[in-house]
Each structure stands twice: as structure tokens, then as C-alpha cells.
Length: 345
Image (cartoon, rainbow, N blue to C red; front, side, top):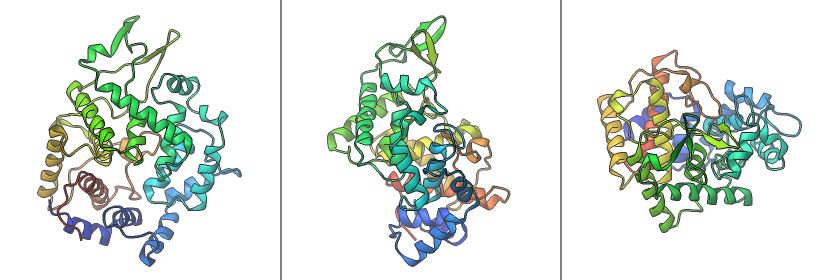
């Protein structure tokens, strides 16, 4: 698809965050250019960004929670999505506080965060690593350690032949079999936002893992069993890698955009027929809108920024054009990282 026209239109009319990220991620404009510095100042003046900055404690910690709404994880995720650079004082201080803490990682997670870490299923420590990866920071030893665990989770998925192999029943409830590894959303986020692991062999194994997860989709709801206690894993967006796009409701579209952007960043779309087909459907929708994603969507998943949800960068969707800007931007990111765009502005 020719992506030059929609990029040009977004650069003219979208919010500063969309314009900044298009210039940086798609057009490869350096953050030091005068236009980018001006846009960065405007991003820092964004009301949602200022609200998160207002959460910052004297030691740099954002809010009180780690996981959940209005806490360190959600705050850093929003700032990075908005286009705030990692060198800005708010993020520098927030990452420093997050790196040198341990007790506060349980806030908003409780004991399940430690349990999921111990089981290799992506708990507090993997979330911590992902929060650094959002800002492009992957040289920390604890981040590299969690990247290795995330790779192990996906590679284990290659051996699963049927969904029944994953689960057993405990008191009539579906739980993951003991000593079974299965990737969650933080495995995917961490690998999508890091690059040091991307050897040819690792890339091949990741593509195989995703193909297995597509074949097994949809994965039913399940829990993790720990000492007779059922714990919910971070499976948001991870249960259906091959949905019927034509049947998606609004919430399903948000999870699709989120998952497909991560898979595109992961580099597994090319060569995976089911994912290529989904991207082709997206291209058709954009073509129908003369380059814009015009389908009317609205759901709290798009608007509410937290650990899992939130994709809206425009201040609101009261005007239809703002919704179109946001959804077209996400579409262009998917095409870009999937290698599907044919031209730029």
C-alpha cells in the first residue's frame, strides 16, 4: 500500500505525539532536529503527560502502585507512547527509582507477581523489564535476564501440539499444567521492544512459536495453580492470534491493534500467512478510506490508559477526525513494522 498520503495528512493535522512518532519511527528523523525539539516541548505540555508528571514522588517513583492504574508501570507506558524521550527528567527519574527498588514491585500485584516470576510465566520482574524496554533501555542485566526468560516462554510454545496439552482441571477449573511454560503479554511486549536477542536462529524459533500459537487459537481462559490457589496470568491480547477480523467488536479491535503492532515489531508477520492475511485486510480497510482507517470504534480499552489498555494519543475522540488520526496512525505503524508500506511522505 502507498502510505505517503496518509502520513502527509497526519503530519498536517494530528496531535504532536502522532506527528513526533511518525517522524521518528517511520521517517527516521532524529530527535535533535528543530521541528522534533519543538514537538517534544508540545508533548510535554500535553494534559495527560502533565498529569503523569504530577504523580512523581521526590525519589522519582510515579504514583503509588507499580502495576495497575495511576502507578509506575502505567505512567511510564503512557509517557513512552506519547513520545516522551527517555532522556527527559520525568522518565530518567522514574526509571532510576524503578531500577533500585524491590519491595514496591508488589504494589498492585501482591504475591502473584512473585509467583508468576518463580514459575517463568512473566510476573513483577518481567513487567519491570518491559517498562524499561518501552523507553529503549535493554542493556540492564535484569532486562537481559528477563529477555532470556521471555524467549524461553515462546520457544516452549513450539512443542505444544494441542490446547489440551497445556491444561488440566482443578476443582472443575482450567489451569496450566505444572511446570508448563506459556507466554503472556509481557513476554510479547518485552521481545517486541528489544533487539539484542534477534539472532537468525532466535528469529526462526520465534516465528515457529507464533505459528504454533496461531494454530492453537483461540486459547480458552485459564489460571495458574500455586499451592491450591488459582492465579490469573497476564494473558490480555494473547488468546486469539487468528481472529475473524470481520466479526470483531470494538474491544476486539483494540486488542487486535495492540497485538498486531507488537507482532509486527517482533518481525514475525512476513512469512506467516495468517498474519500477512490480517495485515492485508487492514490494507483493504485503509484503501476503502482513501488511506485512512475510518471504521467507527469506541471502547474504554482505547481511552483508559493502564497496564493493559490505552491506545488513544489524541486528547479525545469527540471529533471524528481525532479518532481517525489515532486509528490510522496505529495502522501505519503496523504496516511499517510489517514491511508493507511502499512509499513515504
